[in-house]
Image 1: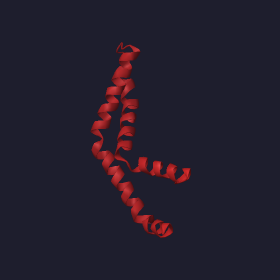
Image 2: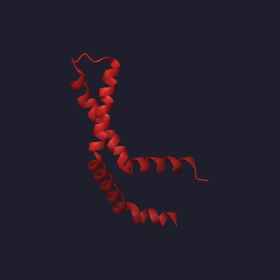
Image 3: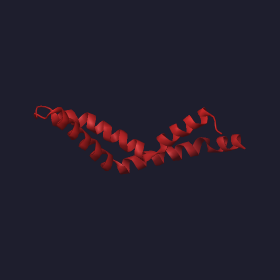
Image 4: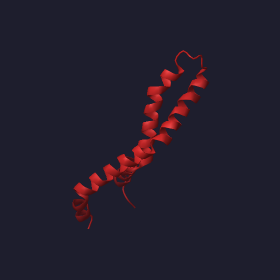
Length: 92
C-alpha cells in the first residue's frame, strides 16, 4: 500500500494537470468579478443573487473549455520535458 505522501502528491498533480480544475477556477473567478456587477442595485433577493452567481459560474466553466485544455497541456508538456527522465530513473 502506498503511503499518504504519495497519495497526497498524486492528488495534487492530478488536480494540477486536469483541465476541469482550471475550468472551475476560471468560472469561479468570472462569478467573483461579474457577479457583483450584475446583481448590484437590481433588487435581487439573496437567493436570486446566488442563482445569478451560479449561472455565471456555469457559463464560465462551459466557455473556458479551450483555455482549460490549453493550460493543462502546457503544464503537462513542461513537466514531462524537464524532469521526466530524472523521475523515471529514480523509480527503477
